[in-house]
Length: 242
Image (cartoon, rainbow, N blue to C red; front, top):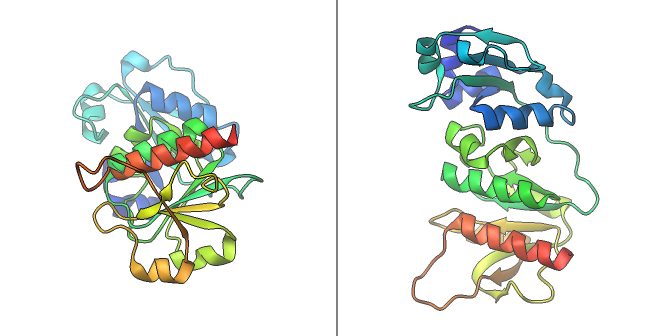
C-alpha cells in the first residue's frame, strides 16, 4: 500500500474499498497488538513509524517514513509518529451470556467511540449498528474508543427487523419507560437505543414491541446524551450481573 493510499483511508469510501482503516498513536497500536492473540485476521496490519520509533517491537511489517510523510498520512494535526493500517475482521459468534447493544442510526463519532469504550471496559457485550449509522472505522470513533474497537464485537448494517429472529427478549430506552433500577431490567438479550435527535422510529417499536425503560431524572432538561444513557444502562446491567 502506497502512502497516498494510506492517506485516502481518511475517507469512508476508500476504507470500504480497501477493507481496512487507520489507527494512530502508541496506545492504540499496543491495543492492536494485544488483540492479535484473539483475532488472527489482524495479522494483516502494517505499521508506519518515524525514525524516532524505528526500534518499536511489532509483529507487523513495519515501514519507516519521514516526519513529513507521517504528517501527510495521519489524520491528527500533531501525529505521534506511529500509524497502523488495519484490515477489517469479522465479528466473532455470540458467546453464552453475551448481551447486544443495538444502536439505530447513531451519527456522532464521539458517541460511538465512547460507547465502545464502555462496552470494552465491562465486557460481555456486542455492538450492533443499523444501516445509516456512523462508520465505526471513522478516525474519530477509533480514537474515542481508546482501543476498545479491537475488543468489542461489532456488527454493521443490521436491520432492526432481523432482531426478533435473533433475540427472544428485547428492551429499549424510552422517556416513558420503567426506571433502570427495576428488577427486570437485566432480563433481556438485546437493548435498543435510538438516534441522537430522533430516537427509535415508531415502526421499529411497533414491530419489535420492546419493553421500555428510562433513566429517571429531575426534569430540568428534556434529554440526555446518547452515550451517557448507554453507559448508565450498561453500568446498571453490570451491577445487577455482579
